[in-house]
Length: 279
Image 1 (cartoon, rainbow, N blue to C red):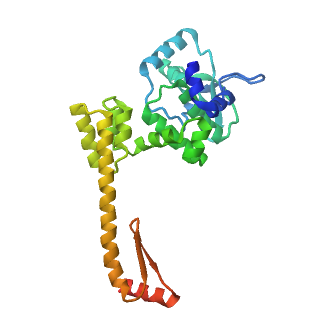
Image 2 (image 1 turned 60 degrees about the vertical axis):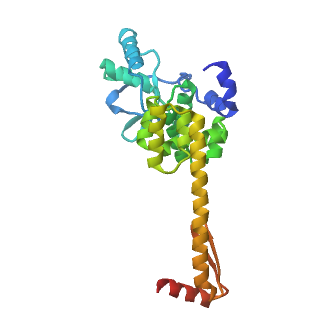
Image 3 (image 1 turned 30 degrees about the vertical axis):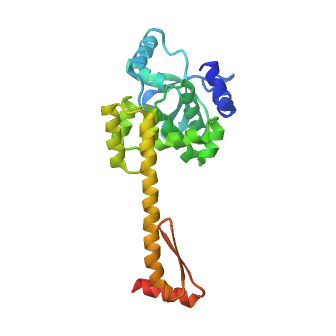
């Protein structure tokens, strides 16, 4: 990682990187040859696509010189879990070897998740969707809020929010982003919409007409503003109708965020309201 990039990522991630230099062989550790059939990929691995050309190059190097650096694994019930070194593992499989040198460490599950995220963020070649999935994965497993994750890895809260928004895009639009037909800026703007059909139509329009990110931002802002106005109008209509029904019973009615809130002075009034609703 470039020095300039290191300065930008914040202390949170730098501290995690320093803590998780997992490939360093520690004094007293034993390297063991483990059968590939006993090894399982890391479930926290955010990378969905591995560069086959780079894996092939690594496989050729291993074929000629062997595996210089052991992978790091964690013992699990039915074998071993990769903590670090999945590229080496894939390259060894490609060569056709039956075993791979490994170091077994007793990492807790939380550490395994952190290491997978940090190592991939260091490489800076995750796709936007892979990065988003990594954030969601670690938030779910470590029970972190967006703010807590942002602090932990040294990113802004808005960055985390924008990345997670990509996961709500329709699969067709995610595919456009994956193959670079849509830019990250376009995808981020489209993720502000909730109507999947409109998102897909706009995405196709961007690709066909070459619309700028700014033009999409303006369109989505107008769409959301219109949606908010219509919602307020509907709530106003519902409030008038419901208020008319309950006015004769001297009840206070409020309609807010698609919820009807009715205030009753005593238990008897509540029973009366429930009876009328059920009727």
